[in-house]
Image 1 (spheres, rainbow, N blue to C red):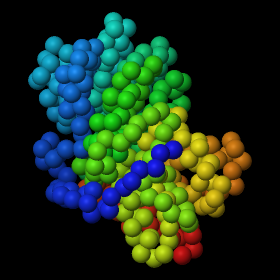
Image 2: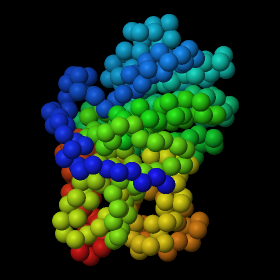
Image 3: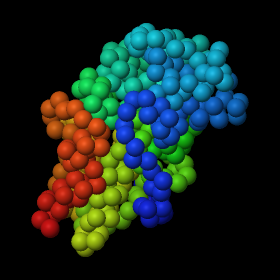
Image 4: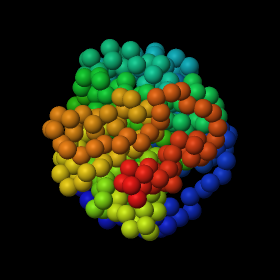
Amino acid sequence: MTTTDFPPETTVREGFDEKSWDMVGSLALSRQLTTGKTLIELAEAGRDDIVVCTADLGRPTQVHDFGERYPERYFNFGIAERNMVGAAAGLATAGFTPVISNYSFFLALMACENIRNDICYTHLPVRMVGTHSGIAMGFYGTSHHCNEDIGVLRTMAGLTLMAPCDGNAIRAALPAMMDHDGPVYFRVGRGREAPVYDTPPDWRIGGSHTLRDGDDATVFAIGNLVSAALDAHDRLKADGIGLRVVDMYSIRPIDREAILGAASTQKVLFSAEEHNVTGGFGAAVAEVLADEGAGARLVRIGMPDAYSILGPPTHLYRHYGLDGEGVAATVRQELGR
């Protein structure tokens, strides 16, 4: 577990844009999706093995720039996600390092059988970036919400599952995992997330970052909920409640030491995720506590075990208690304060 010096929230999030979440506008505003830029930097540094695969989503997932720079190493499969996964596996057997960039609901859910059989079973070094996870697609329909990918993918043997929470986290995660022996799935947002890190943080398998300290409770957060947890920390601090905030970017394997360390000193722990609480990240935290017989109680913050409603993402986060105010309210309630 790594402790990171974290500047005040107002400094880190300076200039964050709260414009509408329309599809067209997102193409210009997705500055937290740094996948394409990072891959270009790796290619320019001599990584001739990197190839990029997408299913007609190169622009909204921000890898189209890589295709313009290296057209011979960029493959657009159209709306054929399962074929894309199979082809990426084939490219891996030929010595390439394929990076798939696609909406998480089309990649992890529609093509889960191919991920299992073509990539995980064969233990191939394919890197999958599932974007627009959770309810980030808002009013584009429940079919475009992805609240099940963690539950599906963390059961696949040999798959490393990561959750970079912002653009600098992506810039850290991709290079760090490029030479990993085996498949990796990165669960990322839509690119409109409030920035958390000023610079790319340290990144390791099974790691985490403690961003705020607090004596009363700990919240283990992933993805968009890291920013929400930081906001909750500031709200609770004003009321005299100390909330430790941990970015648990490595979902599988998970930082067991961080979880058990918090359980040894605090009676109530929280997990926070933009995912169904059934089988998700919170369930992974609960498994660690159960395995070790830890005495702390876990409260899981996330999407209810029901299909999500439609609306602008900012409204949905508020509705489901996945913003800073919602996280803070849950902590207050559970602590009786």
